Image (spheres, each protein chain N blue to C red):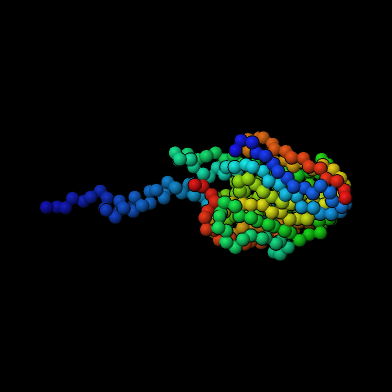
Length: 153
Length: 108
């Protein structure tokens, strides 16, 4: 007697079951990546060369709670009319969205330093870009390990 | 949380030329737009999207916030004092509301 060929093998059904929920979840899990962060920086400054140094980015090495991670950024500058920090941008490469915050300074700020608290969905890099009044750019990054993520339920 | 209340710490007095630290805190849930409720529907985004600090009517610090900013946002920043006057801090919500705090400073 000829064997009846099943429409789908057991293996196909099982892999189908395993991947179906994944496909449903993916649109919501759209993660920012290092590439997304680079794209954001490109949107702001095009292909301009970005140097290092000048920025002190202070983040915990390990964050127990990703909902409230303290971040301090300080950029070396005399903060005079001739030479000051125009902007500090902060990005995260493992959150659902890459942008975190942008601060724009004036010489009246006295010191180009800010502290704030941010959410981290998972272990990832915090990327910081500073724009000086002469147009030069600086960047630095730092990894934070997260024990409990801070985005979504 | 219905009524976000800003709290600001500014020194009462400072010397001319001194750089002071200003700390601000505002109660706000900063709903990221990433979370879902129990029925699986996405809870719409509602965050404070920008903050401006001015002194005697002149803005000296501006910032744009994204959903990655924690609930009840705290921040600290600096200001170089040159004269006595009044600070005005404005937080702008996604829904168009503005939360304002004014604080005076005198020369020591």
